[in-house]
Image (cartoon, rainbow, N blue to C red):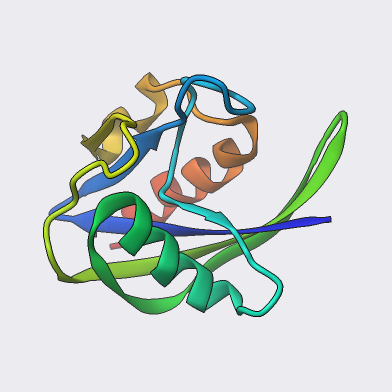
Length: 130
């Protein structure tokens, strides 16, 4: 099973999302920044490393928001989504991918990876509890 950690970075009801690059599985779909957990790291260490590598930012991991497993036809992926804040830097795409800040109410206007839709629904419900 593949393990993936992702950052939910929110600023003033806008979320940072990234578009998967050409040539990768689910190319051009949108997702929250993150990536595969390496053998020697925790989910939290992975999300910090991935944000640094992909976006040039240092993040502070606040808390686990959702942990889930998604079953694609050819693979299973265990996801850990963390609420994070930017500790240092401004997000700039380091790997040629598109990134943008999207208002919470507009998240469903983007074509996300299938595994992210349950998370987005939870984020939309979570906003109603604020």
